[in-house]
Amino acid sequence: MKLILTWAICLISSVSSAAEQSDVRCPEEDAAQRMRSRIEEIIHGKDTLGGILEIVALGVPAGMGSYAQWDRRLEARLANGAHERTGHERVEIGMLLKIQSCPAQNRHDSIRLSHSKTGEPQEVPLTRGTNRAGGIEGGISNGQPIVMRVAMKPIATTLTPQMTVDLATGKESPTTYERSDFWPSAGVPFPSSKRWRPLCWQRLSSKARGRLSGRNDAAF
Image (cartoon, rainbow, N blue to C red):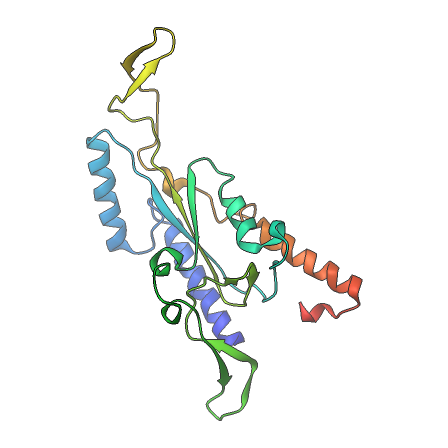
C-alpha cells in the first residue's frame, strides 16, 4: 500500500510539473495542441471559453468528515471552497454525472478483501477495485483518492456585443466591451492550500475529537 501511494505521488508530481510548464496547464502535448487550436478559434470568433478543472487529493485518511452533521460533510465543505471563486458553477465528486442514471450495481464501489501474492493479509485488508464515489461516501472520506471536478463558466464580457438594457434610457442596446480573458481556466490557481483548507480542518478536528474521547490519534 505504501509503495503504491509513493508511486502515485511521484506520478502526480511528474504530471503536475509538466502541467506547470505548459501554457494551457496540460501535461499531454497532443491534448494541449488541440486546446490551443480551440482557443485560437474562440479568439478569432470574438468569444470566450469555460472549462472543467479536475483536482485529485492523495493520501487522505479514511474517516474525515461527518455523515450526521450537514456543516461537516466533507463534500459539502470542498464544494463550498470551490464556489468561493467567481465563475465556478458546478462541482462533481467522483463520476457522479456519468453514472447518476446507472443501476446501483454499476454505480457503487464493491468492497473486497486484500491479500498479498502469498495469500497473507495486507496491512490494509479492505480494498476496492473502482473509485466511482471519488473518495467520499456519506459525507466521509473512505481512504481512496478524492477526485473533484469543478466547471467554470465562460466570461460574459465578449468582443462580440450582446444585447442588454440601458437602465438610463430603458431601451435595449448592445454591450460595450471592456476587457476579458478568452480562456481563464488555465490561470485558475485552484489546487492551492486555500482550496484544500477543508481537508486540513477535518484532519485537525478528528485529532481533537480523538484526544477528548481518549482514543489514540493513530486511529485517525
